Length: 275
Image 1 (cartoon, rainbow, N blue to C red):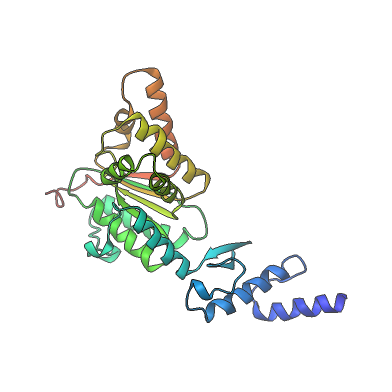
Image 2: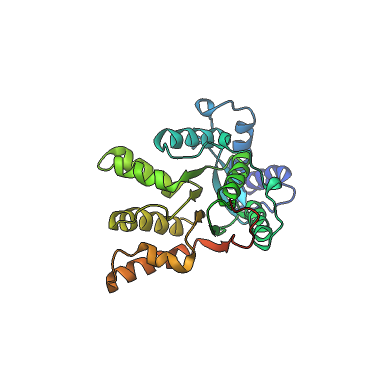
């Protein structure tokens, strides 16, 4: 019996020469190998032969994880776009990280941050960005460049104009579509919200939409990117409805949790982009 197990381990080890295969992980490595064989000849979700449709076993550092295949990610993207109408179409942008004019301190920092994020986000949790500054200085352009890079990497993401998204949620209240939108915003791998703060704040929006989405994404280690005309120091004031202590606590709690997901960067260090 021991010889059979040893032979099996030796067989799998040949396929993973840079790894250490032993009795504790040989079955996982076997699944990785077989899933990759299935994926190599797969032409779509309907033909998926893996145990979990649309997923394949992969090794991430010291852990074995279930990763979504490109076909599943494309399906999820189509499902998201059919549910949320306020998502941006990347066809509307002619943006790329290489075209971001990194000639100011903030833009140099942002491009470096995004490149580092793209290099590491699939292997570990990485914070996103809270980009703030005046109108028309390039915040949306930067986020669209990020979205373009995520698309190239087959990453499931949502890139939405936040004021329109709020209107969608209001119109869909008490329907299945409302809950589908909320679930999509919670669960997408990367959430990008453009022009956060341009909407009228209500207790419903703050406590039933923004708060739960942020809380979920903290728990699930899912990054968030935001653009806003409101600086982080003024965000609490934006989220309060009156001067009561309860309101200040609720707003402060959301800002505190948001800081767990994002790094704030001001883009107001140049006049060149103001229009």
